[in-house]
Length: 444
Image 1 (cartoon, rainbow, N blue to C red):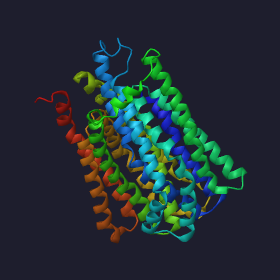
Image 2 (image 1 turned 135 degrees about the vertical axis):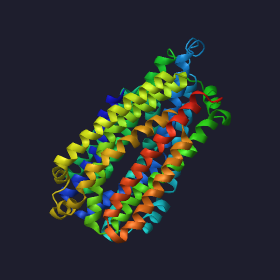
Image 3 (image 1 turned 180 degrees about the horizontal axis):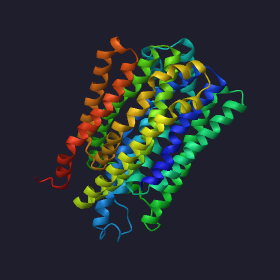
Image 4 (image 1 turned 45 degrees about the vertical axis):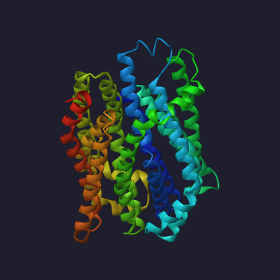
């Protein structure tokens, strides 16, 4: 179950790497910084809607587990029941969110650029990038909901196919448009727009086939859709999503804060931080494959009320994530400088990155547990614990930077990022036993 997600996830950082590399080779540090700012703005938007994937995956997995444990009614009648209701609810929220983003795009961008310290050249590039890519919002948010549903339905292959289409089209279209058309570096924005809608078409086809197979060719009636969107049905998903939304805001404090604070140190340091973050995330996408498997499996076993299955899943996930963390530490230690050289030929950027290579080596050691526990707690739909974890980790990030910035400069930013990962890993490790007991034995 993890392998398809890993194969798809490998292409996700490659998209950012290709975008950055295109700008790095056909333009200058301002273009790299502009893409970093533009990408950060969409992270700010879309990560706040991360509950569309996370909440949908956890709730669908539990609903699927309940259905598998008691198939007498749902399967016999040729209906998909609660899993399909959750899909309808999540897609409806996604489309509503997309409309909101499109309506507020100018206000959001104007306020964001007022708060982000960067040069006029970087800001102009980010502005042009944003107003092109924002029109992918309906596809992007709907894809989040569909991917979460695929994972919850234990179908990581469908999620993989969708991600591969999006990311491969993104890389190819961005390269062709940037290099072979007058668009220049702005071609990466158009490439992303084309890729998102291409992926949506593929995801809808895969989703329709899965629904048709599960329902024996039956239709999801309009009356069933209206029933699924009633408050008594959608309330649980709404409560979970509120906690996950707060969690996403805390993520923004860390990830947007990282790029925004780096911008204070000039265009070169901003370019370095953009490249370093891409390399940090390269590791996380390997681990996320197992986190997605954790969401699907632990969610299913919680739905079945199967404690043995939950414990076995956690044990296997732990060993795999620790092994991958150790391997990535070795790879970064041996090839970190070369990996940065692949992303830019700007000698000043490459030279400026040298003092921060140690963080590439240290990050996987602590972050593997944080990412693994995220997946397991999502499967448990433990929204409150996930929310509180990120609140404390965001506080750790800010406090570390504020206290140490005056003494060690921008190195405090990298240390603060490391601290936030350590807090996440420790908090969820401590909270796991109580969370599992509450899910399996709510009467205790």
